Length: 494
Ligand code: SIN
Image (cartoon, rainbow, N blue to C red):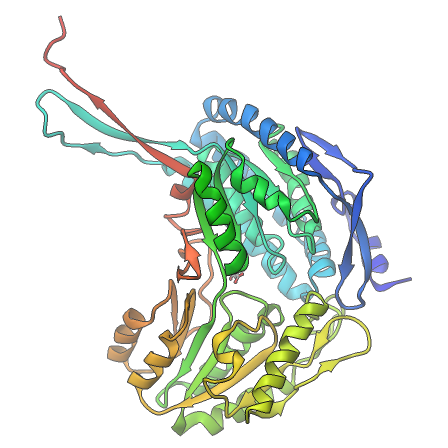
């Protein structure tokens, strides 16, 4: 029996693996379908309904009709309770969700289950935040006048998410949208739509009213344009490439929608001579090789100060040597495949370019295994700024090591990028920690850690990595409008 069928058989709730669209509160199997692939073999995992532009228009209308009564008939507390139920169902079904996620994305079962728990944490976080949509009272400059603000949901939200976190990127957007009282129309990634559909099944079981959540899988690129231009959509939240993000932001200006963009990164990971080297290597392994290097926040450029460059490189190579590549659901696997063939090609291009310009391959450096989308985890040394890896996000298991001498030099190198999502550095010097954390041009900084993502931490970038914050105490506001109410002439009542 093929690998994926064997694991699909093991699902406790087989109904969670489903390729239907969810429009107007009904599960719909379209005649037209597209293939979804299992990345460790490259074979077809299943066929998913391919929604048309008319389906999107219908989903948007239905979400618009349902949203107002959803907001008006529920309190923040009630929406919080609903989200809490959804969170509980996600956690109860975590093993099944992790199997589905691993099969479509390729990440290991451990990582997939970690992602499911991470995904649930956004739902439980925003279950709490739903009750905290505070307004303000503001002392008015006009006598006998009360000035106050309330927060209202923006309305229908278009949600477009990537394949690298098929569950968490959905909940990080849908959680706050529902908490605020919005409805959502989701275009899941065509590489990994099954996790979105499974999560939606659980949302429906949790009691989410029909039409508040709409899921339209599709291969049609015009669908994103529809979400960005349809006047009934009041907010667009997109995670993906900077190129597509810019295009969608341009399109959204036509109706002046609110927009949040979480786009590409090119994170510097800096190791100073005074760093705890064990911690720096362990963190580099997590930060670089999590999800086989396919995260926007992963270390893309490793800058190591001259005094520890040799020791750091040796230890990193040793740790990479211990990685076991294979299908995500094999228990021995610690590094899964890449998502598809073009992801493998991109890593190959970056390695070949660096090698041709003088970089040294310390380990890896080639695509591996005869089937599926694998590339050997790779460490390059003697990397220089004229190589593609210094400018472009690789989105794969490639750790390029640059050497530097001074803090000023590395700061200049680190900030020399149009991206500004995440940055990391390792040093025991508290003054340097404070100095550099402020001077790094990025939205998120990790000091002596490679783990910066959590439901309570504001997630988002600056420069061409986008705008808007997800998660945290700021995430809810992205789905709300502030309305000011002025009650004047309070002295004239009879
Ligand atoms: C991403 O980098 O795409 C998201 C990763 C995260 O939330 O940690």
